[in-house]
Image 1 (cartoon, rainbow, N blue to C red):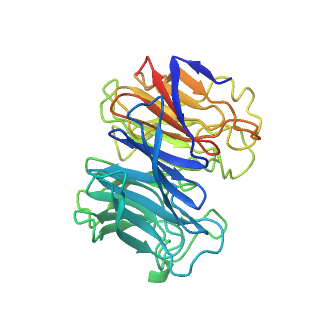
Image 2 (cartoon, rainbow, N blue to C red):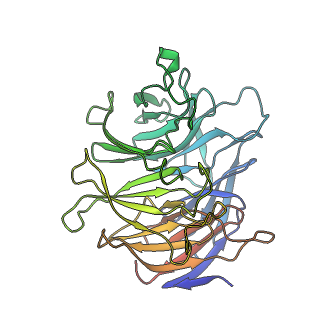
Image 3 (cartoon, one colour):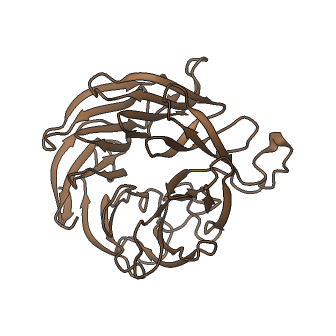
Length: 375
């Protein structure tokens, strides 16, 4: 049986292989890890009985497991997944009109070379993306302007010096992991960018055409999990500016205990300092290595107040109160039942809606809709 603390299960949407979930109004959008399902739309006006509306498919060899919606515009990633597929299909970012969710209409596709786009942020006009690009090794940071969604236009890009081998830069990481922009998030005139095993960067984008790095931290050499998401907190906590940094419990540089999340003080943003960590109680009793996907994955980018929902892989949903950023504490949880044939849950993504409901997607199963009395 599923276990819970300060949470209540409301409903379930069956959509196997969920990668990311987003809710706009009463429509839920689910990106899928594996083709042919690309993005599935559900009506969640009654969260106890989600109703499937439609699915947008992708061809073999690709997936579109990330999705964001603003102002009736949906963007989904196209990223290489496996082998094969049609020769005329490329990586990139597909743009849809979803003002009528029952009838999503393709508007355009911004195309990139190589594997395509992974994670991104979208504010309704600008998309902050992590594409591969011709002449670059790994994924870089890019800003697209979608003021005319029929014609996305690149505004600016940034990369770690050394990635642009096509421009003559010397590549210095032959004995280390390839640089990979994983997930940019914007707040104000800053981009908070996770860069996998190269840590994170804070970029000044007051001039979007020329993003400029103002801080860099990399914990991977000591704690061998990749940096997944850097989530700035809008309000000060204890008079300090705070950023939550989630490491993902995959792709470890060496065997290790499960990944966890960091709390950084970015009051002096050129000198980010870790001031606390959070791990699910009992998950790491002795520091011994464990198999991957036991620990942290990512926080919800959409939250209110000081409680952040997390998708914690095998540990399901975790509600973490950061009111005291020096001592984060768990105030709620929900662990779904493992899917048939799976040894444990595999909670991959989490978000909230305007009603305060929580949507937790499983990599194998679908989406559980949950309410909590602490949010």
